[in-house]
Image (cartoon, rainbow, N blue to C red):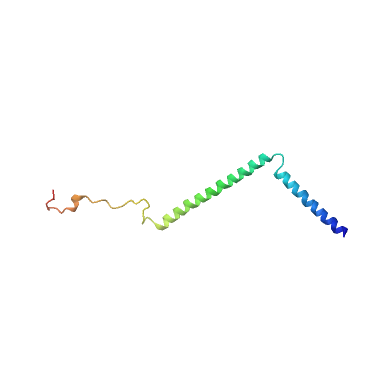
Length: 97
């Protein structure tokens, strides 16, 4: 069994060494610079995601407006002109003044 014991010790020492190297890379002497770089990457990713969402909303609005057509106006404007009171009175009828 000494061979198995040696193998397990070797595997454990390799895993400890890899963990220490990883920690040294992540939290090395220039720790502050690495955290700024990581934050900058996260901010950039957030901006990209926000831009994609905005583009999707604009695209959805454009497509839905095209599908619905111009049947319903989103601003409530009317295409008919308001009628004037003089136009309602028949010609030759006495006005109520």
